[in-house]
Length: 458
Image 1 (cartoon, one colour):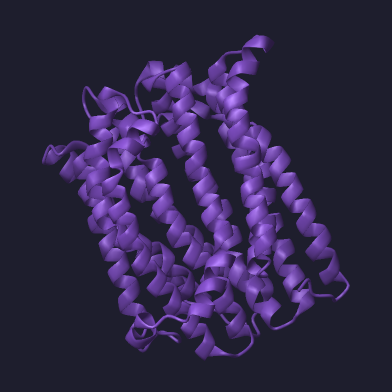
Image 2: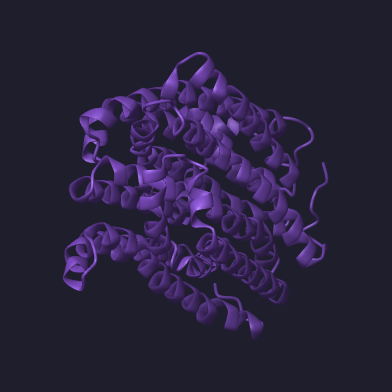
């Protein structure tokens, strides 16, 4: 396993060797849910309803990842900065404190999920038909909460040490297992959506076990130690949570948007459009992953050089990260616009669903390229420890813009000769333009221009 040399390595090479395994890891991680949806959408006679039911579970799944992301994205940059300052002991305490937070939160989230499952799903827009599928899937998925949170939340600390290929391998093991088990449990054993959930839990368990085995072995520079996990550092806990809160807000607001969209679609359209939203959200996830991999893969490089007080290398890292994210997003935008039905067919073969979904896809992805600006700006804020800015722009795009517009546009669009459904799907691209531009512009003024002058935005 090759370890990236953050200290003296070339910036371009460091970003490349950090981002590529991160891309592979995130693509494989995406397969957990995407493969489930692909198979679920093809269950004979009930694929569309089953897909809509599982789609209603997305907010809960996102919230589980939100807590894992909070501790991983909060502790990861802090860990990288301490390594840049040549303080591995403090970096290790940060990792173990984060792991302790992961374990404790997973227990609370599991309990809350089972306690409020049905009321939540009904609030999200479940009908009598889709509620059954949603409960079948979620009641099993929640049992694997601790595995999901460990596998997702501890990987940033493996990457912070430069072992990005190891982080990728942990996800590879789980994703391949899920791909093999899904058709066995769903079709061969006739378990339907319950089979998909069982396959996911087993796969996430294997990923978590691999991560823990590495971080308790002599191969790791920083190790998980029982004494530190049982006695987490309270001061560091606060710093981890506060810095990672922006990632939590990102996931939380994604969950909130999903809830509001499903609710509005249940009012103005019904189960068909909830199913379409699940499909378009899945397509979006596929194309979001490389952008997230580029920015999150660059984060340890940015944090390390910032911690080492190297202004030019920090600036170069930010520039390369943002440029790569923008070029990719522009390319992806073109592919989605040219071949919309091809991506929808991945999740369904229903011709009526496809025909209805294509024009909505064009609306939903209209300003996809602007999302690269949001990713680049927000990752930079988080990588430099500028938690207040990271949190604000997480809230700004989703809570201040998307949610109100999702409620307002269905009433406004009919006055413009369009349908309420089109209004619901139009809220996302509008938020991409406004939120992405504001986030990137602020980052450029407060950080990039200062670094060009050799100043550090403390």
